[in-house]
Image 1 (cartoon, rainbow, N blue to C red):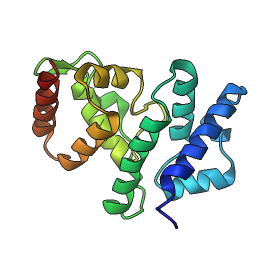
Image 2 (cartoon, rainbow, N blue to C red; image 1 turned 30 degrees about the horizontal axis):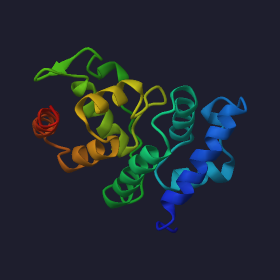
Image 3 (cartoon, one colour; image 1 turned 180 degrees about the vertical axis):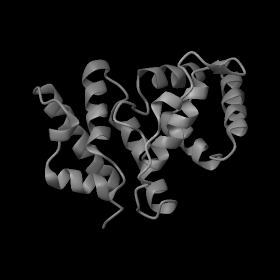
Image 4 (cartoon, rainbow, N blue to C red; image 1 turned 30 degrees about the vertical axis):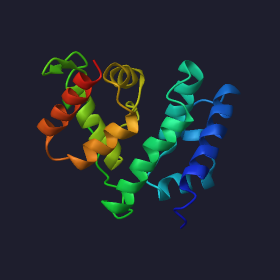
Length: 176
């Protein structure tokens, strides 16, 4: 397996996924070829990841290919560095996630985003959730945080949610 060209290959798949979505192709299960699914799996990703990016790109013009590549490079690095190229097999239970309306230290959405980012890192997001969805993007814009940057911070502080909250609070305050 080659790692060096991950970003360019993912970008090509992203562009192809957007074209497929524009042409009316729907459903993550039939969205990618067998070879594409195999490549994605080898790199700790799923067809659902690609489908979500294409759907939001066409519907909202976001998160865009640059953000998607940056996010997936962090996931790729985690997959090979921490998970040693093995999928976790676990899936985040959406019913146990904090509500969208919850806040911590006055920061709305963050209690929900932290477990979501951890699940993204580990490849444990259910098909019903997307890291960097519209709600996440609103949070990132409000607090002047790059989505891939937040994912990296969550990786670095993975076992210390309070430190993640502190980081977001300081970043958010610095931008005001």
